[in-house]
Image 1 (cartoon, rainbow, N blue to C red):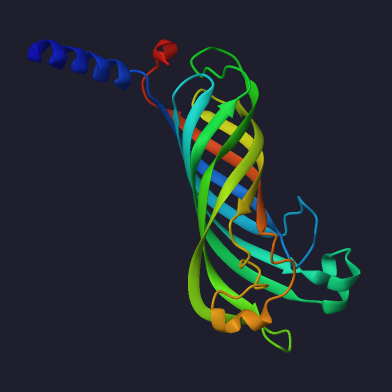
Image 2 (image 1 turned 120 degrees about the horizontal axis):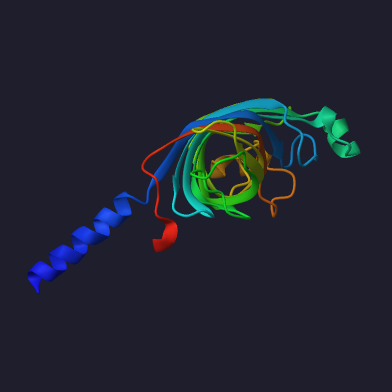
Length: 229
């Protein structure tokens, strides 16, 4: 029985090793913020965003994906169509480092080992966490650092389209909104309880930010046997 278990385990591991194909690449685009400060447009990139992406394709339809993206976040009330924000005229300029992990699902088969150019739409979701510096607006409206940092967890929701442009290169474009479980990214709510008096805006609505841009990945690994998945 022991030898049978070892044989079955080795057979499983052998099959798994031949069913893996990987992608590694970069993301380049822009970001925009949706919250209590700045424009209320949903997709309006106004700051650069750069990152790296790693994927593990587990079938012709789905991949496990991890990304690391650094971006500025900029909000300017003057670019809003809300009269109250225009009168207030607040501005914030922060940055964040996001780690995201989840599953990417294509709407139809995307087999890189068949000939020809293929273009497929896809969606991505999972979980994110973003490291950011804590700020608040003081009594005179000055954007002031608290001197601390926090992690904001969230849920990414991305839609995109990708196509193989060579045997090993895949080019994609996606727009991905991040719903966070924080209301502190724009400084409308301070992290410190001692500064709660400076909070403003809709404290029942959390912050969003959006990444829009291109991905370019390089594929490598042995030809997969997707029949096991």
